[in-house]
Image (cartoon, rainbow, N blue to C red):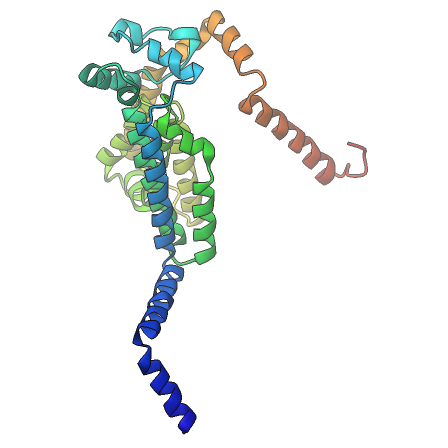
Amino acid sequence: MANCDRTTGEASSHPLVSSSVGNRSTFRMVFIHQPALILSVVVLLILVVCFVRYLQSPSFWLDEALVALSLREPSLPAIFTRLERGLYFPRIYLSCIAGVRELFGYHFWSLRLLPFAAFVAATFLWARILVQRVSRFLLPALLSGALLLGSNFWLEQAVQLKQYSFDVLLALVPFSISDKLFKAAFLEGRNKVKLVCLAIPCFLSYTYPIALFARVIGWYIAAWTRQERRLNLAGVLSFVIPVALGLTSIWFTDYRWIRDDRNWTYLSGYWNDCILRFQLQTACCLVCVYWQIFSGAGSTAI
């Protein structure tokens, strides 16, 4: 009993210590049991670091400088034509950057303003998708935050005059939309206007159609397993027609320059040993290994 009184007395004689320990414990418990808070802190750190980097206005890389040359004295004929050294840049998006350049002048920060804004929006949207998927699980939240924070290639896009941050932003849009929209449009023939709006970015981005088709095909495979297989013709047409128009538009403004032999020769030489070629070669090697192992020829020397 005396020991109990003495302990109580010591605790009451040090209220600040007891309070600080309790606060630390409470903060730790809140942080552990709120994975969304982890991702929020990571996103905040990323945006602060990248904003400081943006304000520093680092010099252009070579391919950025070549795009910037097209924006020195921007005009529709200069933008909707072959760019310097055969580089490719979505022309409508480049026109928007040219508009910002006309408003604020020819500066590092003004040329990079829209790519930086797209980076911020894409980072928020990606974090939102992660929160929806891992908001109740601590370990996936920690892993997602670490991968996001350690993605140097993505962080660099905050300060580069390239289309990649805009492509990522648009590519995330289909995956942030509920399956209910696709069901209402493709199966029931409702919400067709929303489906048309979802197809509009096909006019703006090279990679968006790939992400959009992947999302739609993934939804339909899931619907097929639920025996929801009958598509509404009006809903399908409200999707296919604007997508086709977008691909046709971007062909005439962008893709057709690929047919220029000078462009293709330069690009194939410039990117000969870079990431895409390496990944294709690696994929072919992995396919060969898989075939050797699982096709009954596993005992054959590779």
